[in-house]
Amino acid sequence: SAQIADLQQKLLDADNDRAKQRWDSIATILEAKCALKYLLGELVTSKVQESKLQSNLEQSQASCSDVQKMLMEERNHIAELEAEFQNHILVQEQQHQEKVNYSSWK
Image (cartoon, rainbow, N blue to C red):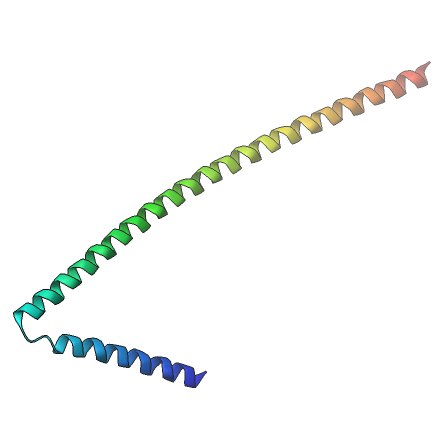
């Protein structure tokens, strides 16, 4: 585990050194312009990706909100059905009790 962490750190350091060497090797205005053009292209690409991800996130949040609303509506419907069922059971019990009382009264 320690060796893996050490290797990972060495790879990060080497990568940082390479990036630093690239920037340090820019010697002319033309090279700087090319580097700047590349960086601006990367920035635009990143911004486009960020925008797409933001849009996807907003769509997902809207979908989640819709699903939560549907879930709440279904829970309310189930509660109504349970109340109706309980009421139906109560009516059946009352009718049964009336039949029992009527039978014993005869």
